[in-house]
Image (cartoon, rainbow, N blue to C red; front, side, top):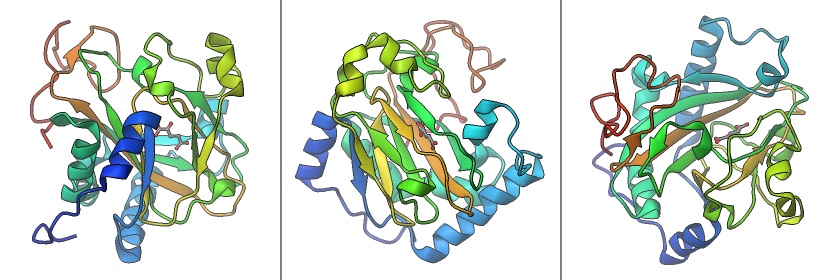
Length: 256
Ligand SMILES: O=C(O)CCC(=O)C(=O)O
């Protein structure tokens, strides 16, 4: 999308739905040609560093091949991560000023045979003072349920006290809150170029990829500008010199 193109705000109903349920689906971020370009670049970078082997090793690698902060390595992917329309929608839904936390390519290899099991994202992050984190999950090809689309538990973003759970353990989240096993689950298939947004505490999972194509998603995670460093370890803040209590800011966490 050219920056000269007018930004399209989301409807009030969609924003209200996101705020009460903790997720929403939005159509039409990217054209088919843009999806093809970003998908090829993600696969190229994942293959370049040897991550796409075609023979998934550990159960974690089997569920998901990731490349974190791909925007820093590729001007092409930086265009997508900092896409003006994407950032405007995230800011409208969160309702607070945001910065980029990080992005990643999330690839499920063909016939990978492993789900990304239910979890909340925020417990993994070294964050405090961060009430409204929001993630965008962008489909770079059609993602029906059998190719690994996402499912969400409505309202679970209000659960603030859960810890990090194992993405490969189907019972992990439910061991912490057994009643969630019986909660409503909403599965959202996506056409290429469409996306879901979810709150950083909304419980979500993704199906295995039972097709013969790679499932390539691009995730962009935004944090409120108030977010401070908690001091716990994380690959994105490793050796960056932040002290507990520091605001996470600087050129690697651009305001959007
Ligand atoms: O793409 C997946 O398999 C899982 C994605 C996910 O957990 C996330 O974007 O937070």
